[in-house]
Each structure stands twice: as C-alpha cells, then as structure tokens.
Length: 93
Image (cartoon, rainbow, N blue to C red; front, side):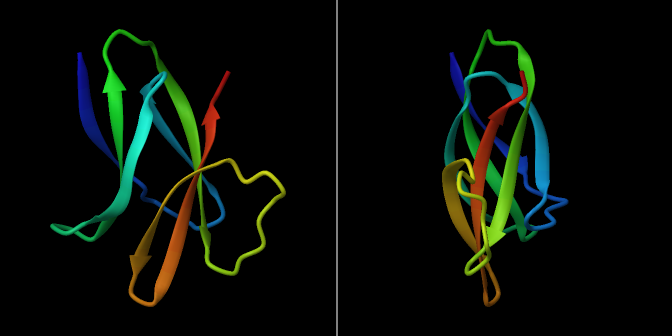
C-alpha cells in the first residue's frame, strides 16, 4: 500500500543539510509552502514495508553557487521575493 506524507523543511537554513527520517525508497512528489502555517514542506509518496532511513536534502537560493553535483532536483518554492530550490542528496548508507 502507498500513502502520501508531508515533511517539514524547517529548520531550513539554506545551503545546509536538512536530515529527515523516512522509509527507504520514497518518491518526492511536490515542494511548496503549506498555506495554513507558511512552512516550506516536501510531500513524499511512501510505500509500506521498508525500513526507516535518514535522507538528506539541501536548499539553495536562486543565483547561489552550488557544488558540481548538488543532488537530484526535487522542486522549487517561493517565500516573499526569494526563490528556493530543493535537492535530494539521498539516503544515508
């Protein structure tokens, strides 16, 4: 069975790692601001039956210098005049 869960991207210090606990083999569906509380969030498709792991994400602002391999692009969200881009650095081994 599959379900969709929301993960908060706070505290989100742009350019620093955000480590989230979630089941392995999840799929990122959407990045955006939850209107009820203005929290940057990540919605993931979760498959039952997988062990939990730590997964690392990083947020960069438009125009920021990024490493050659910033990870897998997940999505973009806006807060006021700022535009932020979320990258998935993958599961911890």
